[in-house]
Amino acid sequence: MRIDLHTHSTASDGTDTPEQVVAVAARAGVDVLALTDHDTTQGWAPALAALPDHMTLVRGTEFSTKWFREDDSRISVHLLGYLFDPEDAALGSERDRVRDSRINRGREIVGRMVEGGLPITWERVETLAAGGSIGRPHIARALVEAGVVPDVSSAFTDLLSTESPYYVQEADMDVVEAVRLVRGAGGLPVLAHGQARRRGDIIGDDAIRTLAAAGLVGLEIDHPDHTEEDRAHLRELAAELDLVGLGSSDYHGTNKPTPIAACTTSDDAYQRLVDRPTAIRPVRGDEV
Ligand code: AMP
Ligand code: ZN
Ligand code: FE
Ligand code: FE
Image: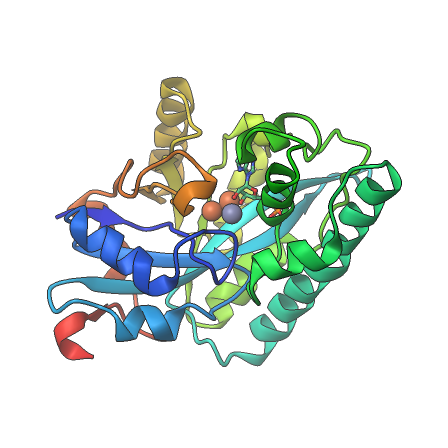
């Protein structure tokens, strides 16, 4: 089976609608697809409605969280949550707080850029986001349109990097708390791209051990941003902590060069994951 458990649509910062993500996955021969937009479940219903008979949809979200260091400085951590109850009040209120904070944070980044003389507007960024969770890729596209940078990736090397004077952090949801909340909502928390250094500081092995103790069930191992050494290291950690090892593309449409199913999850790992009880279940198109 071809299994891709991490993709984005226009419900957050991907460029394909949820229906288009499903269609692109079908064309690539994907059997099991997870839609995991940032801090929202908005794309679930349209993806489900577009599901072909033979394809299974795993409904998920990629939560924006933080690991807090002893000195109160923080490291951004992306936590995938699969098959949780979307109506869970505790998880829902934290998620909405973080998603709504993305609006003010995006506005603040754009405000700093306008002040710095860059020819973009908040209105244009909001239009590009089209009602989805606002992220830096939407600002990147406004910068491309305005001719400031040639493409989205170039916007991230400098202007939108975490070191940039324009950079503003999004709201904080403690990752340890997030793991507990996803479990509490009957879902499966998995650490996304845990070794992707090009995105900024990464959490150490001890932090991952703490997350495992809090209820983490898996680690994303095969990911386009991970080197061979990163993957080998994560494989060892997964074995030590009895965590499921996943592989995924983190597809974003044309906002990133990675094609869908560029990395995949083994049948075995997928079975281990979904053998656990969850609030909602993977759904096949012919069951919708
Ligand atoms: P944000 O959630 O607003 O902080 O933006 C983070 C998102 O930007 C990630 O989920 C990726 O989709 C995207 N991103 C991060 N780094 C890069 C990069 N170097 N090139 C293109 N997209 C990136
Ligand atoms: Zn993204
Ligand atoms: Fe991510
Ligand atoms: Fe992602």
